[in-house]
Image (cartoon, rainbow, N blue to C red; front, side, top):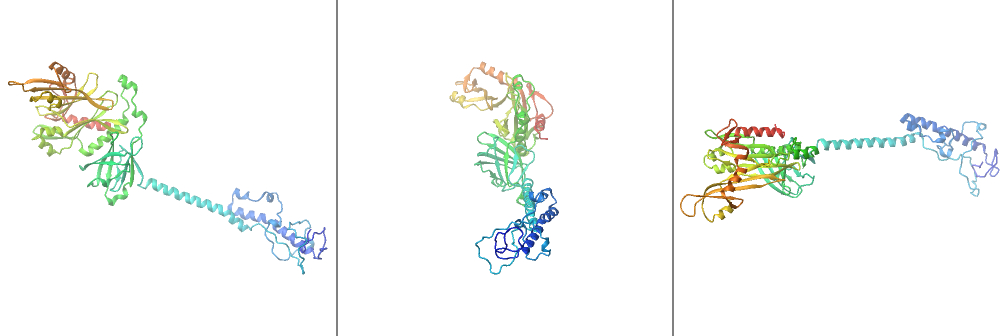
Length: 538
């Protein structure tokens, strides 16, 4: 052992230090007492920890040495108080061998050595251990609270925030917008469109169009004098010519909290099976392909025209003469017989009074007030393949649109006017055309409508004398009367597929005019309602 006063190393059970004479019995008693008291501390600490946490993890905290029943040295234990041990000196165990830092033999010797136990560093008390255990639990609780806060914020943004929403073209539910709502349209590839036109048609008769450049979108405030109400918004990509539509509800500023702040218009992803036509359907003319995607696209266009023109209406223009206005016709016609029908539409934007007035004084203007169009489904929207502002008419006071069935089974649009072509007028070299007609038929080839045939028949004033002479032409070139008759037989009314009448003296049943199939205004309206139902508009 070492003398606690001078640090001199001594042998065995000496009672006094042979170097300085210091009594060793008191030092032994104090040190052994300190060792015995500290050896009991780990169990106290464990009991306190078990009461606080009551977990398996806490029970495993004590060191392996403690679990083995080993005594901890005073160096690792709590400091011992500077007070005398109450136990008799003879009871001090001689087995206690505390580890005490060695004192250098050459250090100065104290003049009045006093026996004091050496205070060694010791582990923190049980209270400190409890504090150490609580800290990670507190962090765990804080983490939970923060996590719940993040979830709450995300849920609010997801379910309650109106900013950064996404809408899909053709959806039934209208997007709610205010004056400052920002709308950004994208194309079928999900890319922002950089140049496009926007049309807004309202149930209140409002209709306007705007051109937009750049991919930053536009706001509702860019439309002049727009009022709260229901509208159909149509976006037309200037590059692809594809159009998409979506219902919109405009609210005033007092209800702007109900509106989206920003919304991206996207093309819905159609099921691949809905957009493909089987080879058997094309080749063998078997069961029609699934046209779900095409009908969804046509629905957008029909919604737009219903918002702009209204449902088909029949107006009595004069006694026993009836005319149609609004979305007069929507019909599904497979023009090229590929298994996917196109959408044929005829619209008239006149009011009842305007229509009656035109009938009484501007027949040609009335003919031009009807717009005929053919649409094809493309990229989640529709693409216009054909358009004309004209209906054929007869001396009997009817206006109609004839469709012709070609020899190959395809369906053609026939347009007959009473205007001589510029090419033929030049060929006549100033001779006057007294009467005649100019007929052109158009058919679908690929994704466009193109001219299939043109033939003209004119009665012209002779170079000399009275009367008239027959003059025949086709596609800008003079032809014989025989060739003209052949074209008429091929593309004329003898090959009629269907003739839609929009102004007629009959509104009752199917009839016939010169042997032609006849769909009167009332039946045209029924065809339209049936088509709207097929595309999903009840």
